[in-house]
Image (tube, rainbow, N blue to C red; front, side):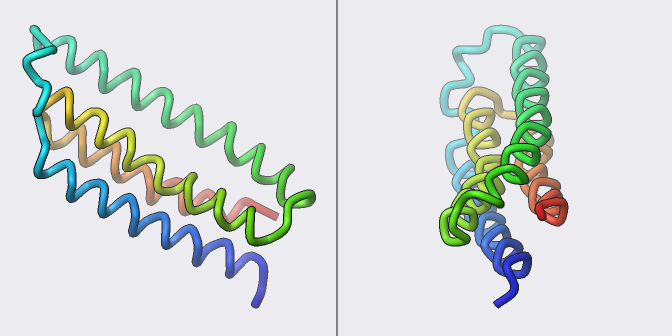
Length: 122
């Protein structure tokens, strides 16, 4: 199988894991929302998580491009799966702290953007 196709398929598996994490967030949404005393704090947490997630995309594309030449394909595929699925972890973390559905959806949707960036891996 072509290495790029394999990478994209494993990235798609990461999309499934991110979707699973998103559906878990629907059950636990706002579990620790009492920790956030003001609505502005929720916005700040969302902005921080969004910034970290977007910065991680840039760093991981650079890193995966360099590692693609050094790692065996199985390990690179595993890293791609984790990379794509990790957007769901950010959504899960935000869902525990805030009860805002749109922020959760946006953080989880970044997994699709992460999967699209796998096209840049050579």
